[in-house]
Amino acid sequence: MSERREHVPEYRWALPSVLLGDGDGGRPVRRSTRDWIVDILMFLTACLLALLTATELYDEPRGLVLTEQVTGVVSCAAVWLRRRWPVALALVSTVLASYLEMAGGTSVVGLFTVAVHRPFKISGPVAAVNLVTLVPYGMLRPDPSLGAGGMFVLGTAIVATVFAWGVVVRARRQLVWSLRQRAVIAAEDAKRLERERIAREMHDVLAHRISMLSLHAGALEFRPDAPAEDIARAASAIRDNAHLALQDLREVIGVLRHASSAGDDGPVPDPPQPTLADLRPLVEECRQAGMKVSYTTKLAGPPGSAGPREDDVPRGLGRTVYRVVQEALTNARKHAPEAPVTVTVWGGPGEGLTAEVRNPRWAHHGRRIPGAGAGLIGLTERVELAGGTLEHGPRPDGDFRLRAWLPWSP
Image 1: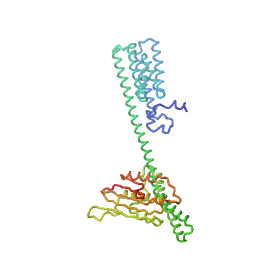
Image 2: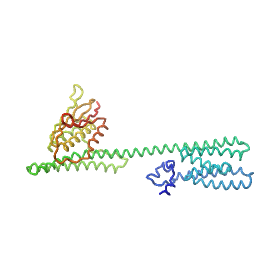
Image 3: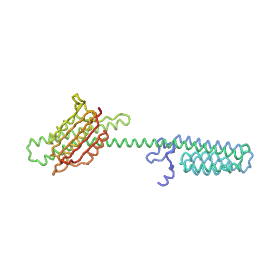
Image 4: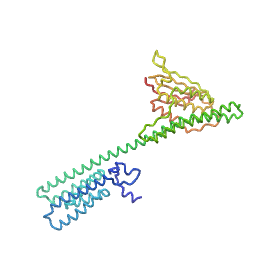
């Protein structure tokens, strides 16, 4: 494992292939076609610069010419190592270029590579070494037409230009990498939010049905001597709620299957959602299960108007109120199954819509219906996402109250 890490660049994001998605999930980074083209161009650049300086060696001693040629060939071949050891290549070629002219092309390529693949705390000193080596080069190998000062100015301009170019390329790749990472994080957040939405939907769909099944089954358990008609009625209610639970579950699973088959291109439809008008059937269903539930609606409109009907409430607002009341009734069945429950919904456009569910805190000595305890947490998140507030807890009069307020635009 340690041997493999030695071949992984320290700053992977600076590689063009990584910007295109290679190396994700810890996979080794492979050179793309673009990387090979860039490497070949860098090699040809170093060779071209070495050949241009070779034309100026015609009047130099034979031993120096031979040394220059060998150094030029070796340094050009070393360009292929620039991705693995960029700093070492840049420093060695720069030191050689302080006296040997044919190593100058590799020195320029090495400086550019370090500026792209290493941060300024590393590339800055390397650029400074390049500037320092211009002094002995100008003194030992002066140009008759420019002189030592002119060669230093020209060399400084070349070093500054190459270094700035590399820094700009690095900054651009860093920006692309950061944007890509943000996109990945945003995608993960979207998946997480979708999972949470599906979990809330599953809880809303199944918690109510399962609690109804438990209520009827508990009645059969504690009243084995009940009349045959009551037993048949309870068994019918268990069967009906089981079928409804399976139907609701089938709808949610159908949405999930549609999402997996449609991919990222097609819109994912939501399962059929309840509205405020569905509260009355919900309350009636609870009454048939044996709960004592009273339901009151007070919707107010502008002065002089008849006021809005339940069907006039916006669908999103009505769905949230339905889920609030449904969860409150489910909790009442769990913790106080024999207590009377009062459901009140009031409000209007501009005033907001308030839903309140109250029940006495009676002691329940039977077997309690198990729960994850996440219903009120998810309900609070749902209400807050809609711009409302949720309050729940015991009251001084001995009742347990759950109240939700939601904005209703005029």
